[in-house]
Amino acid sequence: MTLPLLAYAPSSQNQRVEGYEVPGDEHSRIFTLDKTSSPTDVDVLDMDALISAAYRQIFHEQQMLKSNRQILLESQLRGGLISVKDFVRGLATSDAFRTWNYEVNNNYRFVELCVQRLLGRQVYDDKETLAWSIVLATKGVEGLVDALMGSEEYTTNFGEGTVPYQRRRVLPQHAQGDLPFERMPRYAHDHLTQLESLGYDFSADRRLAQSDWMETPDAVRKVAGAITAGLAIFLSLVAIATIFSWFGWISL
Image 1 (cartoon, rainbow, N blue to C red):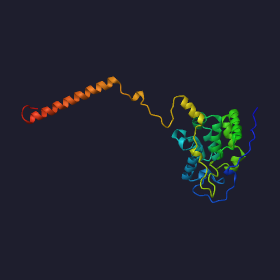
Image 2 (image 1 turned 180 degrees about the horizontal axis):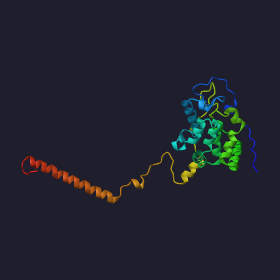
Image 3 (image 1 turned 120 degrees about the horizontal axis):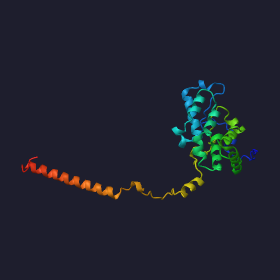
Image 4 (image 1 turned 60 degrees about the vertical axis):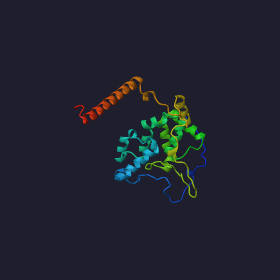
């Protein structure tokens, strides 16, 4: 039996307020395909920019690696076989996204990342985090992604042809906007604690100890010293012999 989504109340956030200002350079750039046209009619450069924006939104800059590219999904999008929404869903359910984000976080942290990257906002409160984490626990990663992208909120703001983006990060007449999601840490504090328990030291005053493989063995140092001394003696004898040959004392 599938558990229903727990009810949670929205809190006061910028994206819940309708904006009428003219977007400037500080606003999030929107990458979208015209619903009335075919993806095959879009300029190649515009399609490349849209695909890059989708990767940046889902994986962020730190994870935009060549090994994370989904070539098949890109080809299907360029050929008009899938929509932008399907492409984003494919990225969010890929093995690469699972490896880099799900397997290194707990369910609560992973829910926060998915809400940020798929709905373009921060979670409202702990109740919403708990509600979506139950979906994750019962339906898995694909079930969570499908639930978020199948919600009315996603359909209203992004539809079938728009890459998700951070909504209303900057408000007019505000000197400072919200922190971009790209600057949010990918790991939660519990993962840092786990790494420290394995012996990693992330303290600011740590000293980098020289590894054993960087230390030269005693036998190698002795051989190297003997070779260096032998070369020095040989060069000294050559120099002396050269000087004697100048005076005609010996013939080289």
